[in-house]
Length: 219
Image (cartoon, rainbow, N blue to C red; front, side, top):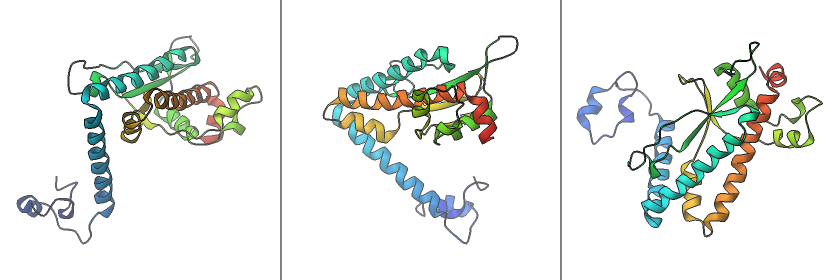
């Protein structure tokens, strides 16, 4: 622990642990603020789950995840492929017994026709393109609809080099889940959220389709 944490990062009410860590001339206020924000989110999410009950919260989590997984499946022919995951139904390991992270692989063409996926460095370019307006970087043959979608700024989890090929990730974050739990009209809130998720996935498909053009401009 001493290689990663200085004395200021540990509560002073644990004097034995503080004494074992190296002293530094400054406190890492950024780390403290991140923990403060994270604890606030965890506490407020816990309160929102308590307000509706664990069963209802779990059902709403399953609704969102299964809907987004279905969207990815619809875009298989456009090069999106969900990384297989394991759900733990009937366990409190995952809320609702389902993995709240949807990890997506992007297929690419190979000379021999086999299935391959964009690697980490290539996904970094896609990740960069996702939070930019890249409509002007698309080729002339791109449709007006594709350009409209490509103009949106979308946030995703950074590329991760997992064993079954690197992925980009979308997930149910605490602020978004609180919206679903606290909504006056749950069905309308879910539909609105899924519209944004569909936009994100459509832009991913467009970035994959025109990857070589984006690579030339953004690499």
